[in-house]
Image (spheres, one colour):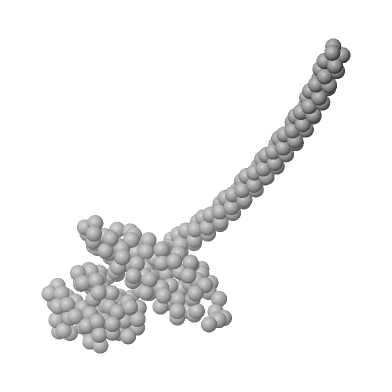
Amino acid sequence: MDEFEKELRQSFERQMAPSGLKAKIMLRRRGTAQQRSFSLFAWRGLAASLVSVSLCILAALAIYSGHERHEAEKERQGEAVRQQVMTALRITNHALNHMNRQLAAHNHAHRD
Amino acid sequence: MAHDWQPDFEQLVDEHQSMVFSLALRMTGDHGLAEEIAQDVFLELDRHLGRMESRDHVRFWLRRVAMSRSADALRRRTARRMDLWVEIEEGHGMQLEDRPSPLGSRLEGLLATLPEAQRAALILRYQEDLTPKEIAATLEAPLATVKSNLQRGLKLLRAKAGESLKEYVRGA
């Protein structure tokens, strides 16, 4: 190593870092950590909200589905009742027709 | 591989802030920018602290990232056509006792005129006292390239110093 290189080594000694550098680093580090924890908190909050909203939607769907089933069942029962009434009316009508025919035959025989 | 060493971030900042700041300052020539780079490098270290295996690993990692971030900053500054070394020339942002001697300042100014790769090799050689092999590992460059950059950089710096500082002609 010649004189020039020795001079170079002396000139290129490490310089003292600015006095506030460490404090700035630690401050930014705390800020970053807070930001990270806030992000984590925000993500957790968002996840909890999403789960709550999903549960609400599922519950609403279940209620709606039950209501629909109940309505369909009521409709089916109503139709069955209607069919029974129609059948009863048909039987009554048939019986009345039969009676009417017998009365007509009886009247006809009485006139003769 | 498991390692027993438990890094203490604050202690690492204490230990290495001068090294990181000096590397950034000599690479960029800008006191404020060097301080910003040093902050960013240490915050990056904080994120990677779990991967650090030893004090030597931290020192190597800090040198590599400081040089890399400084080179990135230089490229961004060059792209914006901003004049570097303004602060060193004018001494802005530096306390009086922190300012280098006129001779040292002249050499630092001359260093700034070297190509980036030669400057990086010389800084690691004469500030950090690294061997060419260690410089190659730090800069992730081939050993032959580093040796060439060291030789050319030193020759160029000596020539420039010879022009402006006549007393160094004898040593050339």
